[in-house]
Image (cartoon, rainbow, N blue to C red; front, top):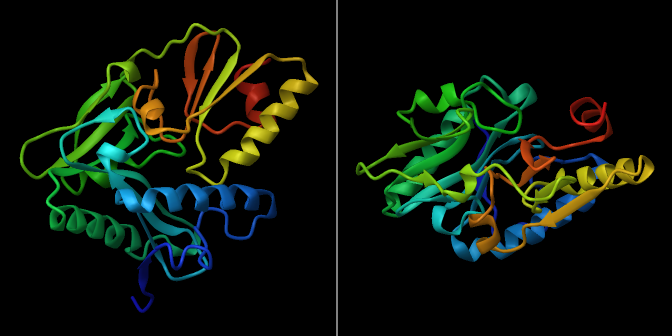
Length: 249
């Protein structure tokens, strides 16, 4: 491997891309929100490490205590996203990124590393099989569908909050919890608003803008969660096509 990896910092973030939406114009406003969100996280130990290429090759993780997810644990690192796409697949980059995260966690005296996954492979969630190969194990579940995987260094294990296992809210209208950790979110919000306005569909949008809100959400959350008729439906980002197919036929 001749390419080099880099960790984004306050000094480099404005001139570097954040991988997910490098050149797609409709997501550039979301990229700006993402960078703003990252700048507020760096002082908390948040790490965004990427390959120095024009491509989607990166890992993003943070101390679990300050990670915006309804997961608790003692001194863990939480992986938000590990993504290698396109022509960069099959070259060992995902292995390198995960090895770095594990090394970094040990160097910082962490008790382990954890990540949100699922029993069967789902879009926007980490591949369970890949992490199991590195010694991760399932330590908690929600709905017998979503799984918390952990690699423990000392036997201590993280867990979903009791709130995350509720999967119910009082509101019956389409309700979406979201933050700006992902560059694709802003465009999804725009599409959902337009579709719901056009079809007179009640919509309740709840921005998760504090750590406290994130830790007390009534569902699994990795930056996006959808409820409909009071029930948790999906972590999948929505657009008009997905809305019509999933909820509104």
